[in-house]
Image 1 (cartoon, rainbow, N blue to C red):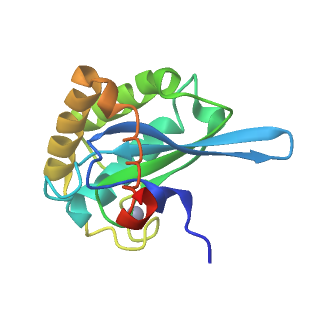
Image 2: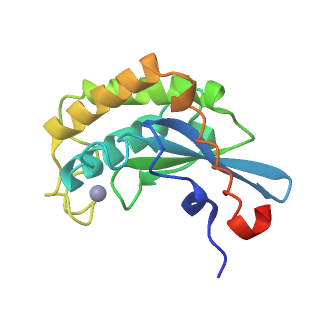
Length: 170
Ligand SMILES: [Zn+2]
């Protein structure tokens, strides 16, 4: 089977940040998948399941209510490795364009108070696994990454060129 695009990124050199993961053309429309990388892989602890789950509920609700973007949000959900989330939107969109939305989403999450949306047994499959305090800490740290980020936090690491083998040089 073919390797899917997200497995081709060098996660050892990836920073926390916001990246275009991939774009797909479906009929006349393009959809863009963003890599919302909250934690730097292998340098920081991954998010706890309780934090990931609380952020999923809070951020998905916020995104689907944002006046500018709500009609273009296809999906927001966690990566299985718990270092980040995927956001899929309608359109051919770059990081500079989506960044203000992601900033206000995680700013909102970092200061969230009250009942987490959808956190009842009727609305969610395992609503007891939510940790709002961890979620707010993770959201605040990621918000700072977005605010203070440099180019490397918004552009995937370039693939390293393969070294020529000895026999190639001969
Ligand atoms: Zn849930």
